[in-house]
Image (cartoon, rainbow, N blue to C red; front, top):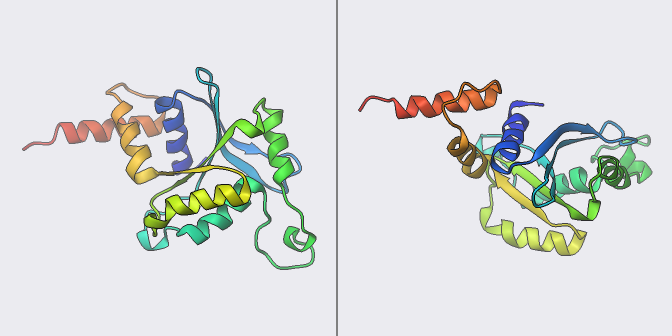
Amino acid sequence: MNAVEHIVEAYYRICRKCFTMHDVKIPKGNNRQLDLLAVNLSDKSQFHIESSVTHVPRWCPDVAKLEEAFDRKFLGAPAKREGPNRDLAKGKTSQQAISDAYKLLGLEPEKVQRVWVLWTINDPDNLITFLEEYKKKKGIKIQVLSLRDEIIPELQKMVDTANYDDEVLRTLSLLKQMEAQKLP
């Protein structure tokens, strides 16, 4: 689990009150894994979260890049790699393997909410329309969350001054105290 995935996992655990499982291998998924699965036992909500974050604005995705990423991560489309032995040439997808991975862990594929985490998007005015069209075309709804604008700020609000064992929470706690203790 990389740093971004760790922050996202802490967000779902602390802010969304979910049990989480990270880096879930997809059986028969040809080197595929799910970044994070989360379940809230109170309201029975189920999440499959994928993260792709770069904090350099010019490298942030636009909706065209999101569609390809969504297809690959949530629908199991093969990577766009040429060659006769590649999944793309064989027409092989991992969609059923992803669904089977959900079921293996007790999730219901039709109830799993898909979430894409990014830093920000380069064409935010097109995002809502794109997500609506994607749902109509592909049959799944995807929520997009900003690490910069939503996840980190919300997680920082929840973090207290405790001496957390979790290094991400401890770092956020220290940064919060640094801001609170700055001299005028």
